[in-house]
Image (cartoon, rainbow, N blue to C red; front, side, top):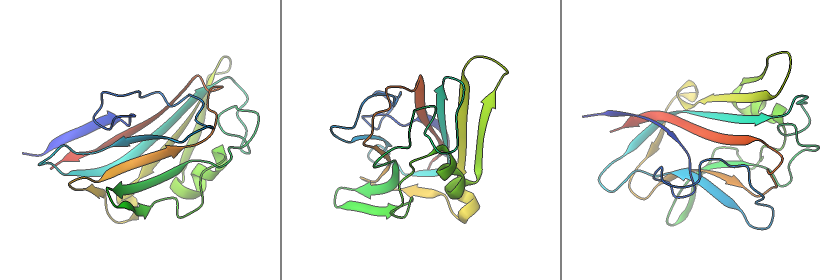
Length: 162
């Protein structure tokens, strides 16, 4: 029987690892991911990215960090043999605005004072098909920059455990 998935990507891939991606990964990449357990497959319909930070987010920066990221964020599907599908097509996300070129649904939530929230909704089904994860496959967000200035940074997936 199919079961709905609504889970943050984490550093272990099963929901038990670190879910807040606001560390300094500039020395070595960190991968936040989800992978189905043995005997299961996942159909991931959506990825929701959130970056919570101080007020003043601009298009040319990431969150409210002072500059763009370098080398940037990569979203991909991989297995034990390597990358199956680079969903960012070799063009890593370096700025708030670049999420819009990939996903279209991007917004900065501001409540007049205090902190702001960058939200991105990437609905894979809008491109024709969900992201299917079979045995030993993972949906990964690869980070290799310093995100310590962000108050929080998370990647939520929604889909079906088939």
